Length: 128
Image (cartoon, rainbow, N blue to C red; front, side, top):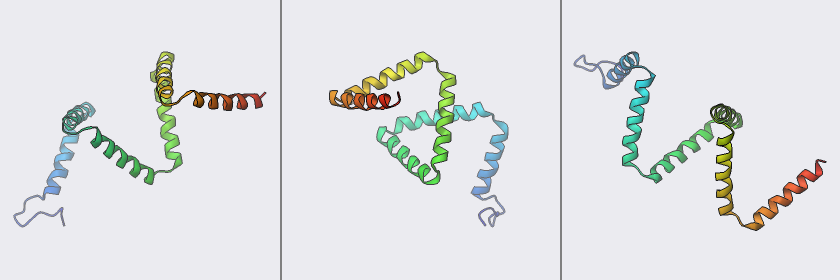
């Protein structure tokens, strides 16, 4: 009944919103929506801190993981990897590899590297 006109024969709020949305979508292109999305994102970022974004990101991740299985994540991972490979060159991968190596070395000591070195040595030795 929410879509019916009220007693004064006026449109319901829901119906007016739907019609307005349909009209707007016919009158504007992708760039318009990208621009207003960017403006909204900038305004939101001024009002919220890192904790806000971590919380909504975690909620979104939990919801997504409940709704999708392993195949979904394999597909999006593959698509993301292919897109990244098309958009970046060897230098990009060298740079992110170096950043990752530095971050890992800050978190782990010599013992960590000795252990993974042994595992790698054992693994490659068994393939000969």
